[in-house]
Image (cartoon, rainbow, N blue to C red):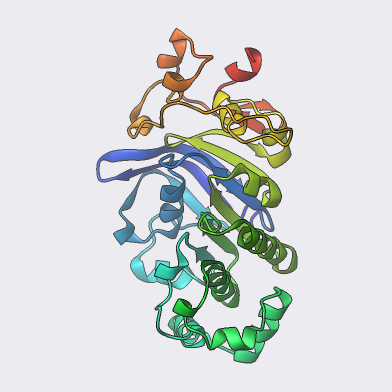
Length: 315
């Protein structure tokens, strides 16, 4: 097996001729959970679409490569892509109600999905697996239809479907954002358990740094289509380097009842096209040089990368 299960190398993505993500680099090792965080519009979900490689989603690879277990999957044919989706790459979307047929039972939909990949649905094995994941009364659940279940339960059943196909890599796109706090906790615990018991690698997209802190081994922070900070989760959260990461953390209410500090403005939609720093218009540490300084993700400390360290210098 390759050292990294997933490698993203110099990846630049577009919708048509409009760049939306540029020069992204990171990797996911076997059994590792990597979270990518940032505001809406920063390119997180676009990154997931590129890894899935489904053409009708509209994402186009302009430059760079996506390597899965040593194999370049950037430009696979439709049939080659179909063979690895589900079996090698699992996917849990943000809104699972759009993933299931609302009026057909889960067991029928599970069976049909597995048949598409020449796999057999074994109801007994599914029940055993779901019991390990602490699903409540899995035999009864399999006979239910999605419309009968809560959002949290639908999310867990989507995870269950991915588990049955035994992928090496799980992509979770804002998999907890529409859930209440209790359901979020359950989903996070189940994903972590899957990693521990099955050796899965998980790429988890979120805008919630609290969720990331409970599940991730590494954290990447994206802003306007670029990775601005990346490293061990504890290093990034306990000693953030980039001014944007510091601003995100400052916007979280503190345990000592400290009021959050808001960040005015929003990420530029054309940020991936910029030459200089895309965070410069919102940054209180900006200098004139920031407008023209070329983007570069540097290793500021061992294993801790950032494209700017002005926030630390001038805090």
